Length: 182
Image (tube, rainbow, N blue to C red):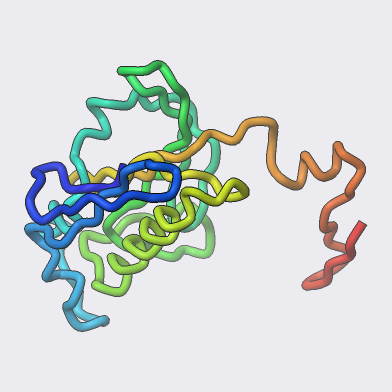
């Protein structure tokens, strides 16, 4: 579920599969989404920027790390109420500092452009949650410094590993910037 923990400004919408997704009309700190693109916003002021529920750590137990990218870290999590396993992508509200690798430090500030990028990812996944070929977003949560996207857990290796084991080969790099289909 995507929604507002305090119930303020939320309206329910129904998808064809009867899953309820809550669209947030307002959040306490949502004005920061409309600041000038290049103006730094202290992350400490963005605690309630999206209005998503704030129950991630109470509801889910974080288990092992499944992957890391330039935009977030994915962990396996278990729902404390149901015992079901999910993948949770954790996105910092502060912009990563690019150091040439995936281990960049975090800034103490963010920008409206970066905050809108996070919101776009949540909205995109929520809109596609009924498409069978796309991972389903179960819930979006936020805390003072991060947004957590709880999604279906896809097990069995990466797409490349599955294609290779099925004899499809996958894309293999043969040189800098080139790809060959197998």
